[in-house]
Length: 530
Image 1 (spheres, rainbow, N blue to C red):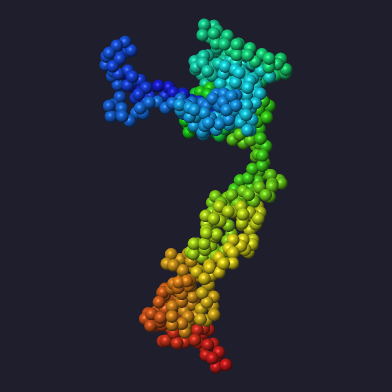
Image 2 (cartoon, one colour):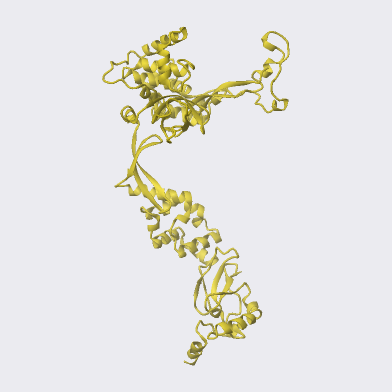
């Protein structure tokens, strides 16, 4: 047997476009079947032209066609039967749900199904034709403009590879075919004529200019209408959001727009193999019914605000874009709430008090103020506060909204387990930092702790608070979880160093026995004499 490769019809389901892909076939399809009956004439030898080690790695069989083929014809047939749920039917290989959903989406875009998935009169007319949904719709649509024969020939050109040559310019191939007098070309013309005759009851006389071939093709492949992305003409974006490539040697390379009917390859780098050029004026004239005018919102990360725009779009292709002079405030608020849900609370202008509240809640495990809950429920607590900019949020209102998520028992529990502040013996208040990697800590000037001979604690049960002691200038002196041990130990070394630097302040030998005060020595003594 030869090194078995074959062309298999696969479908890019996300974009509803079939492709013929060269690939290794399964070892069970022909190589195993050929073994022992070479050339189908009798017993013999089968030679496999690949490494023996690669043989077990091949799939036992090719995947069933149901799993890889375009399911739009099946979806149209089921709709014609009134079979709403394919899962209720018996299948050898059930159609994948995602593939059926994509197929129905395509049929809705062609007008074959309504929003509920029921077949429309147009869909019934499509199903009556001996064609797949795309060329069927193309033929019926063209007939309304007196161009059924053009559509029939175009549909046949896409079906019969090599007809009219192998150029990726379908207009060129159609011109070649029309000049071709070979038996194959003549038979194809007769078939196209029969197809066109099937819609003769819909055919109208040509009134005014007939639709260009590109517009006819785009009717059947609306998602494959493409506009060039770069000056080279090699990269294209389709209305369906797919990126395509064009051969640099293609006669279509200078086109601005292409109606694409055939492309080969995967979603990341499919190559256009059949298309017709058209200009933007033709797009605006013949495809105006597919152009959507919509207000859109875009996040401006540098300015932390929303930009409101008015866009004209043909699917994923933006035709024009400009500022929206009257954006919908509710839509902006929803957009910002979604942005916070997506990117997190760091987008919000939280005050130090709010950040402390959230840190305490996280430390104690309060679900109501967890990052996950706040993001998931942003539409409930944050949405009423939002305007056009996040940085214009009122910090006080934001803090109140966070606090409102806690009922009275929860607030009591939070204050008990993670108090917000530490009050020193000198009466000064200090925020407790619950984000410190070393544990909840507080920064306090050492003179404020005079007279304290037990280490401060927090929570229930009590845990020692990490004290970050500072000098009168706020510079670090010592970090401790044992204040009595510090007083009776390294305090002596601190005194030796600090007396010379800050002679106006008190540095007693027994600080645990002194009155707490941040005043200088003279001011403290004067106060005591009063």
